Image (cartoon, rainbow, N blue to C red; front, side, top):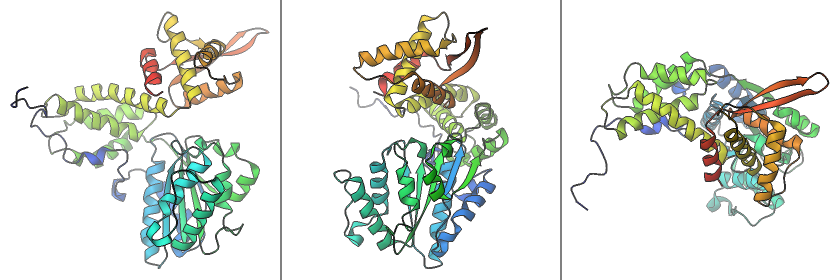
Length: 399
């Protein structure tokens, strides 16, 4: 192999600070566009915490990419700084309930983030303790270290047991916390999430509810421009940002998707040794983002949701076209055979219907109710939005 071969590509530099285009990046306040009212509402809800008092619990709703997590993280960080001026200590824990989906995992993660072993002498092992013991250690940590703990439960609807909401919201009332208090910010894509909660939990939460609406094209354009210094000057062609904004606004106003497309466009320009990012790069990036988004969504889906999707994809391939509709009963029959193949117990038809509705909400499939004819009732037709081969590959890769 020749030492002169350069595998690091062109010397053309596209990015100045690529971190600005990462989903995990928490921007400064002046980079949070179009969410002034939402930030004000969140601030008002948790403002008592900055003086050491009990904040309001909050439930935040909205589709993916509408700034729910971003605003929640930003406003809690700002609360921590404001509280310092009042000689009040606030601790913040962020729990991704897609990853920490059991009550035990969520409590363990919360305790681990709020703890400082050298200060408390309390250990929070990754596993090996009962749920009740994790709670006991969490209460001791909060009482020892903070005046207020703010706990963000992102994708809270993915928690298998919502008893954690009861425990956190009643920690002071039940005497679990004696020196401190706690507030919860629950984030969900499902506007009707609250309806699924036990009445006792609804009562104990006493929460405020805020809905984040999708961004429009103008807001997405401003969001992208506020992060354009991720690129070197003169690298972005003038038409790039409007094109990305139009694509994202057309597809549910998802700012996260827009930022991903812009980053991918820059990467494509870099990979090809281009000096500028063009509209052609954006179009390629859009396809790459779709595949990436789909793979991520499927990888985070429960195993039975993957089997339902695989059944739909296989049935679609048997039809005449990629946009051919598949009836729910057809999906269910093949889904059961796939469960037998994997030696897994299958779910009931009602639950599979719920899974299909969830997949529609995630924009993986489309559904349309059809009339079967007089005396025959209605039935549901399901269509894949993405290519069936891509779906099957994503299902297999995520196993």
